[in-house]
Amino acid sequence: MELCGGEIIELNLGDKKVKWRLSKIDTKLVKIFDENGAYKQMPYDNFMELLEKGHAKIYRNNGEG
Image 1: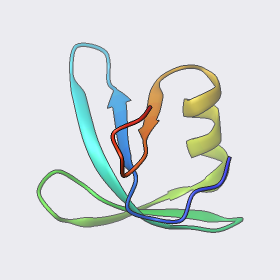
Image 2: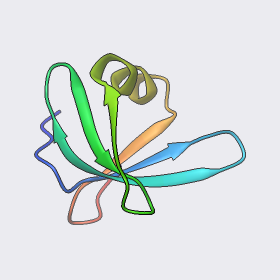
Image 3: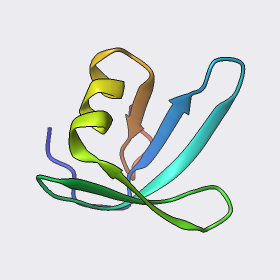
Image 4: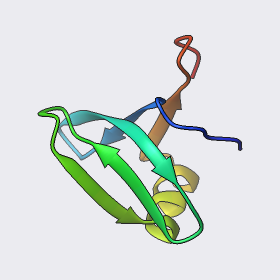
């Protein structure tokens, strides 16, 4: 999966869904902005696990998931 930044990541947190905007991704960290515009980081392995288990979905800049 090729990610270049700007994609929207929708996370399913049980009873709540949140959307983050991807800033940058590298082999160790995923850098994002949350819904309030706050900058956050997540370990790359944790991010990939969320995707693999279906707890996160990526929307490309053109709206495709």
